Length: 324
Image (cartoon, rainbow, N blue to C red):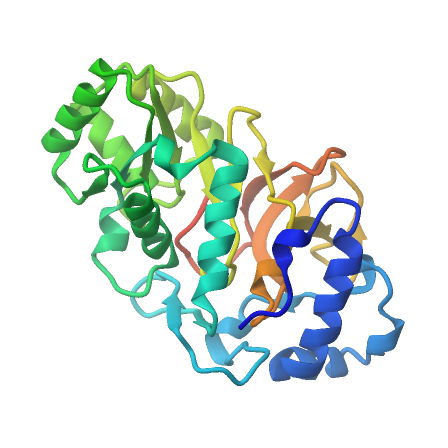
């Protein structure tokens, strides 16, 4: 269904690819087209990625952000909290999402079949419409490993499985929401040698918020690992960045972070200056690839980035709610 091949994106042709997607979405995504017109921007004058306008992420709460007329195959919903309006990502080509997360996993971690994947994601498992659950469930299936699986609140069973896999020196990925990982190590401290521990951010109102350094220090101590990994994704995107042993977030080739001035949304900052995170996600061809998030961060000269917190008065959201 998706004629545009985001996997063909490289550092050399990223701008060309992004401008191709921009032209398509400016024409076919009604809400994005209206937004561009309100800014009085001439589409033909946009000839670099730094001139592309970024759609505020809040539009996913109030509008159908799609750039084609194909049937919706999946509707992903943000977690939010009671009384808040959820974002809706209407996905008309779920195969593009699968292609994106599988290719990104392979890019950063190697083949999923090399891993046993254990998921401690209770808050996500207790609701419908989670893009994270969709991804992890598919990774578990594609690991083709009978030991892979989800754990809700069954910490003893998870601990036993981790010890069994460690004894066999099995390459393992444990992915969990922050509060659940903290709850787990309070009763089941570990010393893991063959397991990557990845937190997906967020306390879901279960614990006080912590900055990443504090959270990762607790998790490193509790799991006995040198580094904690993290995933930066959100309902409105079809791609994820990963915080791995480099201790910075890294994007796959078809995803890029730009930093905007929080006082002037159309002004972009250079490297190593804190501002609002703008995401270019070329896998989002059928929706909107240019999104102004409510996260604060900074980019570095090598293209890696940090997430430093949230805008004041932002809605509480699921992934990477790290308030400084």
